[in-house]
Image (cartoon, one colour):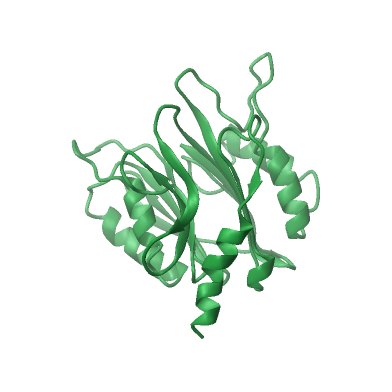
Length: 251
């Protein structure tokens, strides 16, 4: 599964502010985010089992991510949702990525997945469950999980929303500071729900914090190579800025 919080087009210094926890089998191998070969330039992690990604950014400032969702009829040999997420990063903008996601998911070759596609100008979610649907983003705070966007009946979404809105999220500094604490919250000793998932063989395996600003050299990317309650976020902004500067140098 996984969970994503997005503060969209409502902070003065950054139109895209985002936090993401990836939930997966603990024994599934993955490569931490790095710059991938080919064009457009992309920074993303790689699922070593299937070769796809769960989240990434390309040189055009397009961010894509996938979180699993329920689906009744899953093909016996379903194509990796992560491969589609990685392929969406070949698009120039969020609108093109949304269109491509709809086309691909409509083939019925995938298990259930909700795909977030967002850039500085536009964005949306493609629901790839039993029905293929899209929902456009609007300015403000959005939470996405295995349920629909901003599902107030999802306890994990509501916990994230409550923790994030305890303070004003009107700048990248404030959002990243609050999001890092929120997405590091683990269940307490009496089992009260946390944002981090810890089960026997499955749980939160990594976390990303992201700020996509208009000025490339102000953009931020941080990555925790494990549950963020146990692993510190490492600053990998240099990789993000190198990728984003590719677009600027081509103008």
